[in-house]
Length: 438
Image 1 (cartoon, rainbow, N blue to C red):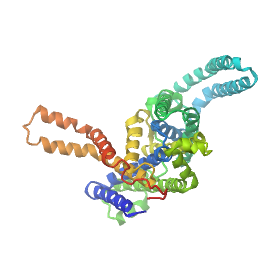
Image 2 (cartoon, one colour):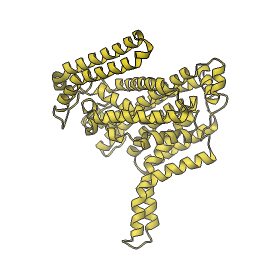
Image 3 (cartoon, rainbow, N blue to C red):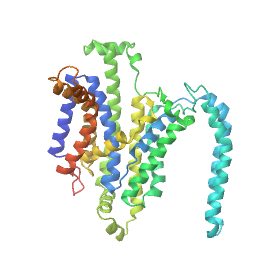
């Protein structure tokens, strides 16, 4: 790791320390935790774009799948829903399996001219058969105490189990999408991934039986203690008094954020270790050769589509892992929060600013951009208040400037992207041509 990397990471650390000393340590650790999750997402996108040149703008879809996995794994099952609709759901699954088997058998046995019509007919029949059982089942589920429940619930397992499961679910979706879309040209791949991610978000929003839709799932279990429990524990009270904490509630909140930080840093370290090993390996050098000259790599006997699929699946898995971590941190699944600006555009700005193709750069970009995203609005408010101070009270122009301060973060992100693309197109920590870590 060279001096440039140490300097940039050191500056980022000093900025977070500045926030802790002059604002609040709770604020500093809250920002830090979200920075770590953003860095993991940026690593996933960097694997796809920096390693293989795959333009995936469906990041929010894979992130949402990770969040959904946190609900389906950690939330307790709704017994009443399974009692009234479990049988119909089982029949729906059997009908789906029968449809798939019938399609596969028909495509093998029926002559080529009749394959397409036969496949369409089987799918049509299967759709109606599945609907006979599935529709009534979902209606029954959503009718069960819709204000508080109205969905199937989960498996009731520890929430930490949901993190690798979220990665696996997103990887499975990435494999399915990659098999279809990776043969497309870069711009068409971007359109396809964006469209598919919107479909995933729509399913999570409107299939209430699965995730309560826009009603949100709250109360997702934590892997760390609850503040209300900590303030009643003698060991924590003694711990807080030892460090001179005057407010137990604030100390408990800080302790919880610190526990999350330790978990998140451990996950980031593991992902980073694997990412660096992959980048330095012969596989990583092959992926960059494919990225730089796809035709030459194919001429040398490399299976370009297969290697692209591998990288695409890995990147989706990392985004799904980050999505499960984010839902765990929030303690709720909010489908309406999965918007392209937060989970796609910002992540891409992180990768571009940090330096695509360099894992250390992607992590740094995640920290810098999320920090600026969080701090831009309050700084914008302060700046506008200072600028409009000389104006008379009630000035419409001053009121307009102050009310527009909320949009400072959007202006800042666009400005950063323009400046980086113009003056540092390789990012803060450029990729090294030798393939070694920066």
